[in-house]
Image (cartoon, rainbow, N blue to C red; front, side, top):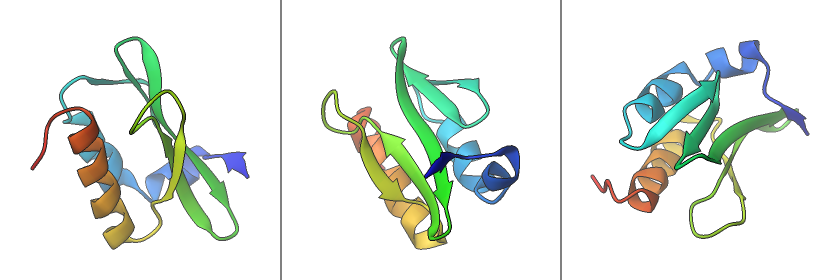
Length: 87
């Protein structure tokens, strides 16, 4: 599995825009978000799709699929819960 390229990130542009609006997240590089000076979300790609690695529960990253719109919606809900911005 490799880090997502700019072309990969274009495929999830709507998700990235939504993450940019989440309070407390800062995009340090395209597709790499930090929270409180620590890496919080970044993206990977492989032949099966796109995946987000995120610190949703504790210090460990959790890998979740974000290829489909439904997966992106679920992921965004989990991120918002993790940062205390439930919707």
